[in-house]
Image 1 (cartoon, rainbow, N blue to C red):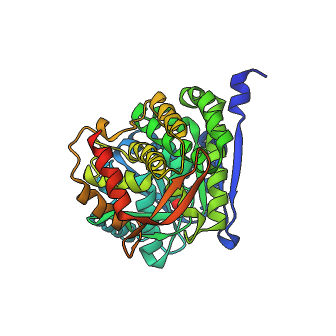
Image 2: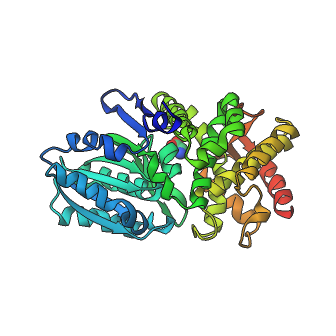
Length: 378
Ligand code: GLY
């Protein structure tokens, strides 16, 4: 069997074990063409609202509509502007009203066809309309395939910060066709890669090492792509199964996100300036540098993280941001909203080295201030 045939045959099913709410993550190249019945079987005799954005709809909506047509499943579509600004009250209302306008009932379905923004928004709407409709995720970005479509975090942004209004609401299926990623802009692919690297940095040094050797295959669409996506989904599924509502270890998945979210807010969620994965990339390097400044992790490990993320083409420093950052006080204020602050102490994900991340819930704000003061001057 040649490499291409072998590659075409790559299929993985990762289970998210949550009792009655367990579901599968189907992963594979050209899954849409070969395994579409996994979707239509769920939706027999039901109606469907497809939520997508203009970019994704142009590329992939017709294929999904044809799949539903072939199984005589009635559908409507709600197409929103692309970009982080769509995760808003205004577009949440638009989706909810459109689903009701189309007369969908509680047992009907919502399909989120898109990246993290569409998945988070459509999943949130599904949790609200008629007190909860069923939904599936068809993630079309790398970031959504390895992170946001899995685990049931749904929501929108508020003027107070990112993802501050939302629900834990698990999908019934995640259907990740990796061939869809061939159409992803290079910048978005890189941004999704930051979340893959995150799983190595949290608790899997062997995976990080594997990524250092194999990242090119992931980018070029080799079999390493499915391998990395499935590995990431297995890691996420394990964490979600043991701590669905983030009372403990799930917070580790926020490595790099505290600094990253603050940078996104500072960019006013303008994805022309900064996309989520880029914020996470800079944020992970900052989390390692901060850990180093607290004498928890070695300069070598921080340098290794920075060098790998830079090698794949991700930004790794605030000095690369194409906008003027506000002052330290502004960033600290956002950080305090993003992560719980209690009596002047913050919760942070820190690291003792690559694959040795941990939750530290009593980080003095003063230490963060000192670190940011220095980081912003570099
Ligand atoms: N993206 C982090 C989480 O799902 O918990």
